[in-house]
Structures are given as structure tokens and as C-alpha cells.
Length: 302
Image (cartoon, rainbow, N blue to C red; front, side, top):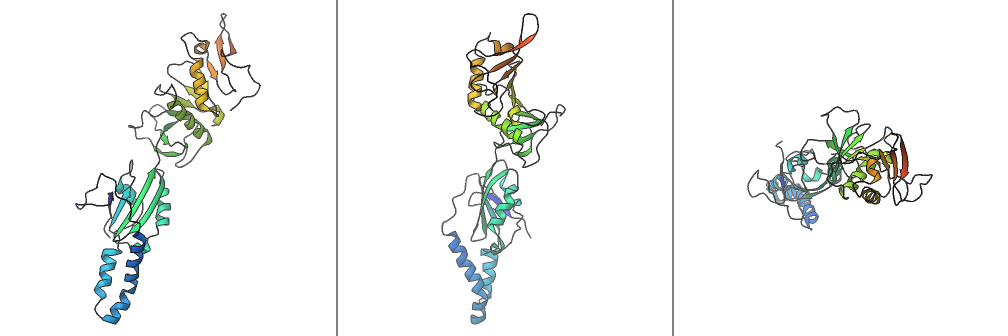
């Protein structure tokens, strides 16, 4: 059978041409029309037997009305309409009566790029697919990877989508993890680091070339932030990340603030920042609470 013609939108004025604009919504009476044509197709043999000469009508219905000849795709972005149509596994000429929209929706959702899919059969001879795609928000690299090793893309949930193909993803925040997640997998530590990466993009540190680093056990509370302009390693952990980054900006305000001389800034405690590795005049290091913070608690607040 011939391959299906996929298209974006609801009409193709020229054969093989893909429209750039979005198609119109499916007619609300589409199901009723499909039922009507189905009844006509089913009654065709009986009518032909009674009238003796209407068998061509059934052939026309099966060929031009119920046989699938085109797929309209709405919502295609990083995947082309042709790629999405191919993922349905349907061939040209498949009867609309044999197509299960729910089954096709489930098949499409197995693609790591496709977050949601809705399928509708339309007469004559069409299938309408509306998809919502996952959007990459960060790149994940293995901690032991060599320079130039491939990285993977994750969405806002920390779910792996695909291997990075370079531009336009080179500017996404980078997460360094003990291991790379499998396709479709959500690792708690990577999910926490992804949330931190999104918080950074909303903060005053956006565009600063942030790197999020996870500890050896992929513990969500081990998420640390590294900035090219800051020598200290910033422990973020979990919790209210927007508040923690606002606190970090306050702690770093001024060129001579003690925080800029620290080796580590720990924001995992409630209402304060703990500075570690501050140099003494004799060359030794010590820890201190950042100016303006509360007394250091005994327990961390994630």
C-alpha cells in the first residue's frame, strides 16, 4: 500500500504540499457523519442485492470515504508532521472502521518527544492528530564523561527526551550527574536539579552559564550550583529554590562580601546561608554564618 500523506492543518490545495498554518478544528458533527457513512457502507450489500446494480456504491464508499488517505497533524514542532504520521504505523488505504483512536494515541505517547496526543477519525478518508510535545529545559552530562561526550535533554519533570543534537540546545543549563538517565526515565536527583535549573533561569543569575552538580548518590538534597563568576560552590538542596537564589544574591551583594572568599555556600538551612572554607590570616579555613542570617540550626531544612 502507498505511504500516507501527512500534512499540517486541515486542507492541502496542492498535492504533496504541507500547509504552514494551523488547521481548523474538527467539525463537531464529525462522529455523526462517520456513523452515517458507516451505516451506508454496511447496508450497501443488502441494497445491492435488493436493487441489483448498487454494488459500485459500496466500492465508492470503501475507496473514497472509509479508506484512509491523509493525516492532518496539529501541534507539530520539533517533530515534523511526516514523522508524527509515521509513528501511527498506519498505511494508506486502512479502513477508518479498523482504526482505534485510543490505540493510536497510546502508540504516539510512547515517543519520548510526545507528551499528549488526541486522535479523531474524519470522513472522508482522513485522520486528525493533535499533539503536545515535551520541551527541553536542561542538558544532562555524566560526571565521568570525557570532553565532547554526548549529553541528553530533559524536560521540566527531569524526564529524558533524547540525546542532544547541539544547537539550539547549547545554551540550556547543564546538569552533571553520576549517570545518564534512560529514555523516558525520571531520576529523583536529576528532577531536583532540573527544578533548580528552572529556578536559575527565573533569577538574577539567568544567563550566567550555570552548572548544576549532583552528588555521588544522586541525592536530591545534594544539588549544587556552580557559576563561572563565583569561586564558591553553592549547595541548594530542595525546597523553595526561588527564595534560596534570592538569598544568594543578597549574600553576594558587594565586591568585598565574605561569601566571595568562601569555598562553599550552603543554602540548605532555614533562613540563612552558611559559609565554609573562609580563610584565616594564618592560611587555615573556618565556617561562618553569612551576615544578616539567623543562628545556625542543628538540622538542615531541604
